[in-house]
Image (cartoon, rainbow, N blue to C red; front, side):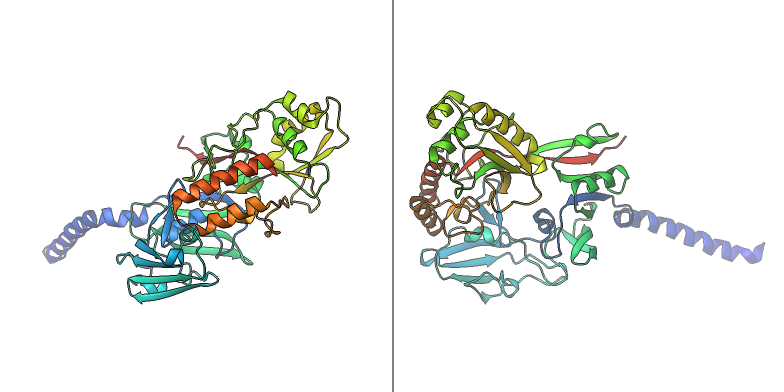
Length: 429
């Protein structure tokens, strides 16, 4: 027994030291070994270069960021100076920002590859940006997160795993870059919401972000559904102004007054209701069937008829509107499509609202690809041109208030509501 005494003593010492070391290291090791993982489903087709903005913002940051009211506030740029009537910007960078590689961010790392815009580093922490002409929404473009090769950023999360099917991302894993108290995030991408719902039911994911139709899971066990309004998106009725019937302003106004209560707060502007530039000067088309009939100029049915094109998620809205327009005396039918046909007459769809009030792409008559109504109005064109040249926010407010007033009077579209989206999450039993 005596010959084992030394080994026993050494073993005991090692055990005590090991135990002390374990207890001292456990809080740190557990952050890595026991960190929770959130399994999230997202619907849509994305490549590594066009991931959803919510994911991009977890991985990296832009020079600026967008405040809830759409105004621009500092991010990687701590401040900036505007010169030459908006043709030049000088940014001071956050010298504490570090890439996921450990390298400090410098002005040489910044280049957004924006056409006709020159990025010139003045020193490691100062960047000069030169535009050919003033462009007041410019600072909102710089809110786009910046990346190095391999999706390396400067954000709170780093990319630690990615799987592709061709060019399409099907799986993405994010792990904390600094704050180890944060959970891991594993995203799985599905082409349809039905596929995401099935994955949830099978237990492959524990949440679905930005769902549009939660009814399949409203009674599912251990599930909570949270509703949130997308104030940066708007559902509207768009008129194809090449169609002879809806080309008449009085007809469009009559149809606007004949839109019934849809059970959601009505909006009367293409500029988001939370925007710093929002104006309540838009014409308010509260439901008024008598006024709609007067605008048509007769009580009996007019000679025209309407076909509403829409998508499945807006079918309920389309049915309510079609029913009311039929009561107005205008025969109305609905066609559900997967894409917008070129020759549509009336379209019910949703459109993203940019953070800046600039509406040039949607309503200026030169923008054939994005002005889907074919709207052309010289007064509106001038306001849109002035709005993106003027850099004084107060003057821009006045410009866009006039824009909203004239546009809603002309009613190339009927603005309806901000849509609801849903976060579906598995709760602890």
